[in-house]
Amino acid sequence: MGFFKKLFGGLLGGAAVAGGAVATTKVVQKVKENNPDGIGDVNEDGQVDYKDYVEEVKKAATEVYSETSDKVKEAAPEVREKVDAFVGDAKDKVIDTYADLSDKVRASAPDVMDKVNAFVDDAKDKVGDLVENIKDKAGDIIDGDEIEDVKEAVEEVGETVAEKAEELKEAVEEKLE
Image 1 (cartoon, one colour):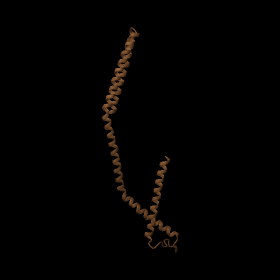
Image 2: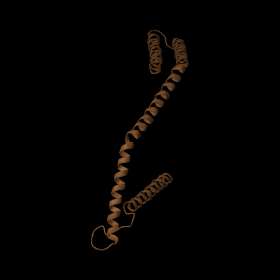
Image 3: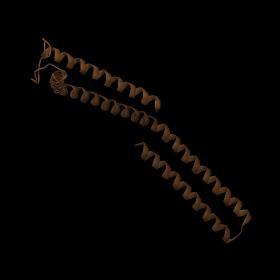
Image 4: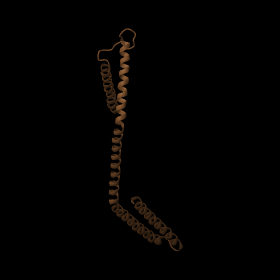
């Protein structure tokens, strides 16, 4: 942060010094322009002293400020037009970039959906295999009515996993639309 502060502080400070130098130069030029034969007794106190110079500098500074203000007011619509055009261009570039990225995502969506579908199908197969394996093992261990309870519980687990896999697939499809 210190580097940027120094950089921009220096730039802004330099700009202020440069602006002050330009303004001072313009005021001096205006004093000379208003008094081609030199400064006289402006305040009419009978002598030409620093007070007369101060009055002439104030008068010249007011004129320079007024002229500069008029130029700024005159240029403002053109500057505003240029800023509006710049902002409009930037906005268009952002919109185009977003559209381009959206197109790229949409273009890759079928590939993503193929992978999701493959994942869901694989998960269903594995859960089905697991359910069958558990049924076989349970049948070997448990007899009678208890085997039916275990089979039902295992089938419920399989159905729940299949439902969740389908919900995942649908959620991904929805996000890609």
